[in-house]
Image 1 (spheres, rainbow, N blue to C red):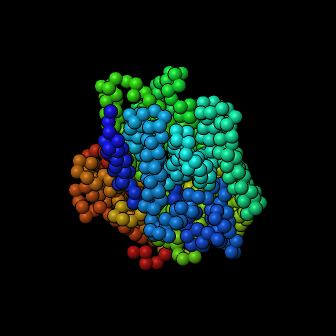
Image 2: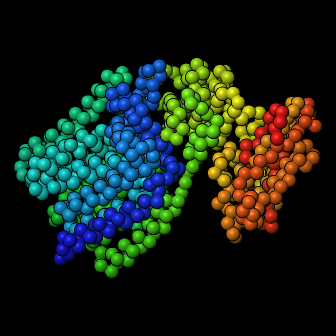
Image 3: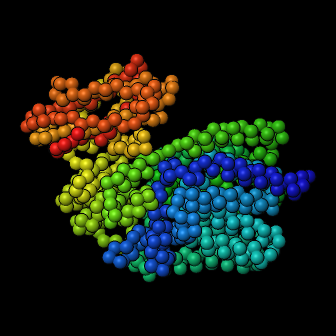
Length: 632
């Protein structure tokens, strides 16, 4: 039998491995996976205004010295973030570090819990799966409620198992305390408690009446915490947004949607390779060993939590893959049960295969970036000033976090009608989401209010539009914003997705630009904009560049950029930044259009490949026609 010291060394190695696979992203900006910086933005209100002024709950901001509450979630996570900002400064590592610490705590708590209800071998296997499962690696680095909520779930279970094993009052009080703190973090924590209560009533030690009395305080503590939280919300805002938001997300019609289960299965297979089938085998092992009362029925609480979450909030799981994080303990524990039953050689092969496959998958996830809102915040930072206010229907906090721009979301529970921010001109910028089903009903109203109150479209993308009422910002006719109106050639031909032009934000040489992505096909990619009457003193301003990721040896051979006005070639330039390091930047141009004053002129933007068109991610940087002097 292995000594306690050697077991401790094994656990320490697993913990260090868990840190190692997540360390590189700790100080990354908010552009990994599902990063939204939203909770961090709410935490800034606590930091800047103080907990007494925010009343210890999430506050979007203050309007005429009146707090605008955001009460869709309990407040503890944002309060912890604010405390971290106070101690260590406002930086990404504070929130990401909390997620990492929560993951490590979950890993250690599950390990020690399993040593009580199974054995150290199963505990060690489970710790490996928690540490290296891609599902765990991916979402324990993001900053949402899951990591901290799962920590409190694990703490409740740890305290319960040690209380049952030792009957020490301290563990019982720890279980009650963890349930309160968990409830103040996220309501999903309480989905585990009914299963623990039921398991204890059915199989706990002592007479049934005594078991009931033992579990009664746990159930009452959870109910009292929820009741007080809802009562406090009602006292502050006149409503119970935590409940109404949860009910809105609990659209049970999604349970009849076959696509929900397809997404669920695909995501679990992709993010938990080997673990999903192995955990299903583990259920069979559990049933077999449970019949001989060798395993605690309470282990099923780790399956009950995500299963009940799926039944109560199917819309959330359908829309947000990170909610699958709650499956991590179940997948890890039941995979470990299955692995323990296999012959040693088979277990070793599966474990090595898991680590290899998980390492490859996790590497890809660690390097996956979704920098759109981070880049948009940087772009807006260049055209905004102190005192500017952003009204946003997208629940992203990048503008608040990076620009310190006051941001109001129509998600607060006591804000005025959303159009008020536009009708009053209070907002300098208005970001309107095009796809979020929660705000789809507001879109037409907000777009109409923007047009009627002096706002103009500044940037337009597939998912959002950004309006402004500020003077002196980029104006004129934007070819990027009017991309849907352009004719794309070749048309009528099936092309891969990368061949279609798109409005994007790209960073070249540390400079972000609102850009027209146009990857040439084998012959050419051409966009034709129909005739536009030109005003006196019109100029065409634009930049050209290639994606920095393709500026490496063996990746393509450059791109030719061409612009025609009518039937006249206006511009032609060949860029090959791979072989010419000096070209790895934006190249700016200003073309005089005064010879077409008063005429309707069609413009075409064309990109052509060199000898072949691989790795030819070409960008036109914010091409637009402006009427001004001295454009050069």
